Image (tube, rainbow, N blue to C red):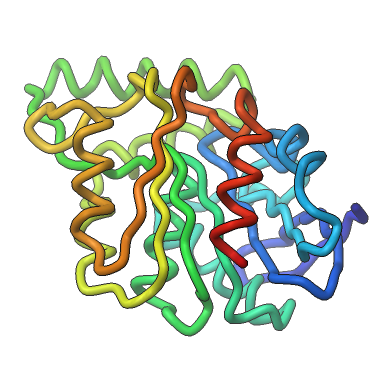
Length: 242
């Protein structure tokens, strides 16, 4: 894979690319991660697949301007990236927060997207917490994210936007007419859904609420199946884009 950059209105985005004649899949990582998180998965992908790994704004080797890191900002940067690379429509594989970005992209810019793979997505619903508990939850996410991304102003802004903002993935996908595959690790305890429903139950209902949606449970996987169960995720993805 080669490394390159694209200039957007919010800053320069770094990406890795394996150009091929097959289906194009854009990979969007989770909060505080980078293109490196897909290292194991990429090694399993077929050579014929056109693979693009993107560092979101404020992550990896991409620029980290002093802005508010809202979902709208990340969405704008990814949309501009797709336009400048001329890869629309492409499949978008989003993990965790990246799945939220992918769903938002399909909602706001449907012509950018050929199909969605949402792996252990964030944005499953509102948490029923009082103010103090929500503050503690937000701080816990910040501390965990800072272990991967030391840019505190980026992490705090993104976490605050994700926790406090109206980022419900079910609303984004309502009425969508694209192929969608929702993947969930059976041992993932990172998120709960609306009303504190277990994440696995909410993720399954999310896929069932999409016309033609597909749900895949990865047994024994936690929050990052593409890292711990790369071969299985590769098999699912290759079948989905085929």
